[in-house]
Image 1: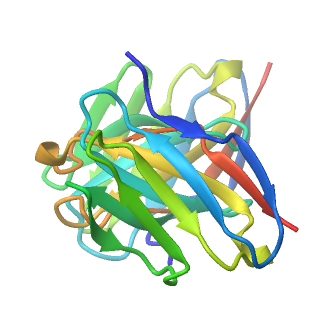
Image 2: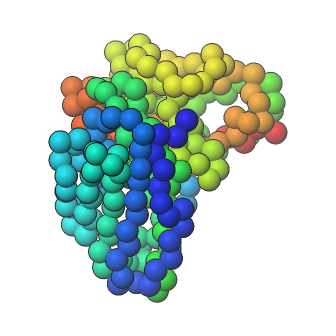
Image 3: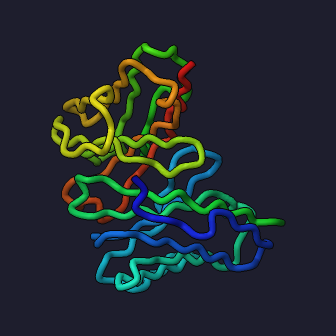
Length: 112
Length: 115
């Protein structure tokens, strides 16, 4: 079953604009991770935020976590055509042995 | 530094048959997890291997089995193939001591088509 739900399912913006994707989940988590997937191939780990953290930055990425609302957001600033991809949030519940639980993803298209 | 390597890249097999997918983890990693990703969906956790043993399993039938070798590489076996097994199968590696708190490294996947 899917733990997380990304919103929106699809997003199309102009190059240079900011893109915001949201993720909601159902149960308490250890951490939440965001991954990017190009053209149905392998996933690339973007950023991880622990349950006791509220915000994290990495380059043009900004992630927030609100455990009271069981939600997270991923902001990509100054988008580029190469950012076109599907973005997934994934939650880890315990010590990692249970694996990650993914949402269905947001498909982001950056128009040149 | 090689990342996660999966083989084959593509595989077409007949209903009722069996397949074996292979994964070599990133150098330095000792844990391998397998995921199934149906078209348009997020990946679903199949199971995880550490120290040559299955640690946890997701909601998948016994037709899905695995193995981890002493060099940490892993195989995923699927028996009695169904049309619904058609999917992208992803392998992810990590270091057990980090407990997944540094993210996972994924391979490019094996695209399985059952006909």
